[in-house]
Length: 152
Image 1 (tube, rainbow, N blue to C red):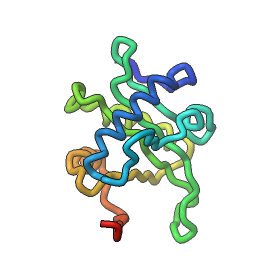
Image 2: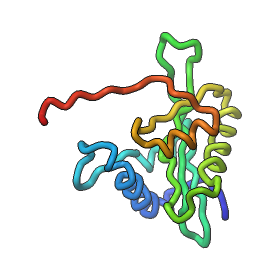
Image 3: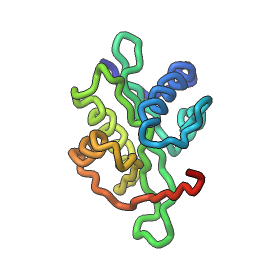
């Protein structure tokens, strides 16, 4: 296995991998578009100086991804900036091997090297497997987003 920084040459593979994330999360949100749903601005994540997008490969196939983006924090918080983690995904056949932790440790290490010491991520409340994985890494629930759908 090889962990590396994504490049523009990876764009097509990353776009396909993004669709795997969308499909994995579809059961948690009935409002995800049926077609052409995208989550990330992958070219920007590759090119921006305040972000790092990592790929874990095995035999030239992407098996895990993740990014960190340095973002401004809310004015009410004691930290001016934080690291936001996203695109955290491991291909189903590789789960349970600690690969998400490997990617996250590298991303958090990069963030710390940039002077960041607070990190956030989003996870669906019903995605208990992901919540458990993040809690093993030391993450704690912070803010719950609530939704009301009056169209039903």
